[in-house]
Image: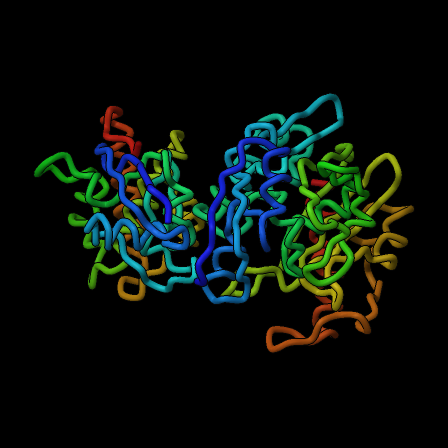
Length: 265
Length: 164
């Protein structure tokens, strides 16, 4: 790791100020950034640690509105009792990210700001039609995830929370790489007041995306059987040593069926 | 450089270290606590698991300066003098180690697992939650047995030394 200067931010305003130092980066759980710095894939001059800012932590549920602070860890999302009642699909998804030690550190804000094409949270936010709240504005999930490791965040912008309306039914299913345990394909389905939304992670050439084909098939019949015969085009899917685009296209439908079955269970 | 102060195994310690120093290196090189191991150095294997503020984390994926002000427990802090912690005793009793390299991380992850499941553990849960700890000798079988046994002892004693 190259030398770096560490700063612990006391508040979001403090973090915004510190972020102007040199080529600074925000540090939350550090489960991606620190490994990237160790391999010198990232070499910020300064780190601004957000993890001790109280205002960024915790899950709030008010009626059907769920708000999760950006520095809330996967462990805290997975074990939040109110969330387990309001949107068990999201809590369950968080309980399957990485391993227990990673879940104690990794945060929802860090995950979405990094927008790894195989991360789980981007699929959840897109399917839940969530809003990303920053220190400057609110961004709809549809506009937030813009490409591989790319988001709509501007320089100096800090994710402070994620908010969404809990859907009547939702579930997430993923097919994991047996070694890295990242999703080769992950599908989040949500059946809410505004219809069915289905988001796919791990597979898209430009990161997380919504599957029109699966959404259309489920719109009138939210049942796994409605997906029989549905084909997802492989054109914009990734091909790598783990899985070809065609294989991923098939897996998307399989994971979507499992997710719908789980949501209806 | 930063001045790092923290509580390690109940003792206040401090030392100067570069901000890029990983917590595992601070423990091993500055404090001489070499029980915590560096295995893969890529957050996969769990040989470096310690408890920071009561939570099992991978000390190869955290900067020492991030832990400043925190309370840390390492494998050296588990035993009560000559009396092994129930988890250590169970690993010995059930032959939960061969070469022993992964053992400190396994034991720290396992004590956290027991603390996280006051309702008790079953084999499937133990296996699922060992996802972040790799052992290349034992095939996990006796590790799982040891954790299940220690979980019984720890809950029956009730007052066992919790990770701080």
